[in-house]
Image (tube, rainbow, N blue to C red; front, side, top):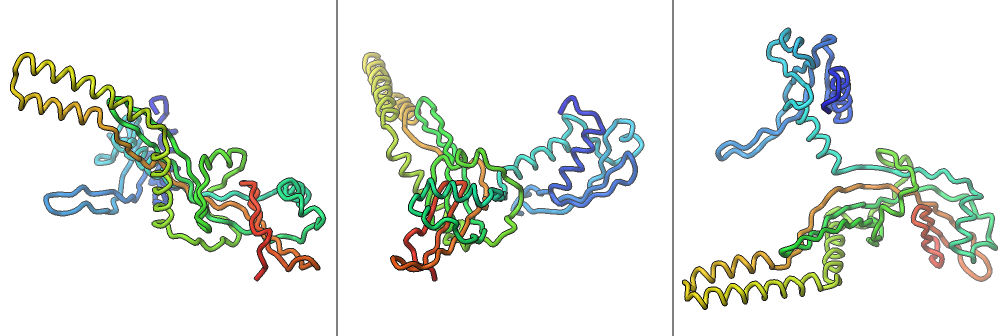
Length: 306
């Protein structure tokens, strides 16, 4: 930000206001008036609250002198950092959808690889394009003893059936995401957000439980070695046992294994689903296929159509 000119800072503030849905007005070339929502910190026994305020912003020291009471927004200023912090917090959550633009021939070629048994039915009937909601969540797992090891976990949860896909973001690296909700019909979720996060947290518990326990055993070994040295020191010098106990508790807290889970960011994603209704034959009844092209999955090859 240090290299930005006043014009660039002003353009950044305007774009930030537009992204946030805040109203603003350019009074003239120098003064910008914006209506924003700010958090008023708690005072005494009153809780924090949100309040709308009008900001008068200028972008050069010369304009600041011409408009008494206006805030000067320059690199390093409180107000510019306030806008930056707001963007960072807003960036923790996102709503994205993925359009589907493959041709029918490309779609059938991919389906033929996934389900060769479908090839005799080609060309398939025209599918119905829908969207399925997925929850993409990134967590940081911090394995803490006297040492620290961190692991970034990317999980995708199917909001319709509850299936969890590890390293979910990797599957979408070649797909083009677009902001906002999908323009097609969205399948009905089978889980609320609260239930979805409960499933994700259970998955994390299982992930931690199955992790190689050497990080715990190694910490225990180091703890026992230091505790032995501490005990010998206090025993030989016949020092106060109360002091020894206090230092021993500090050692225990230092080496005690624990796992801290921190949520990094969350995305509600709409992935395309192609729904095929296959006609009945002599050997099977009418069936419905759901093809999720970005995940390379086909569902319902044996299910009956409603």
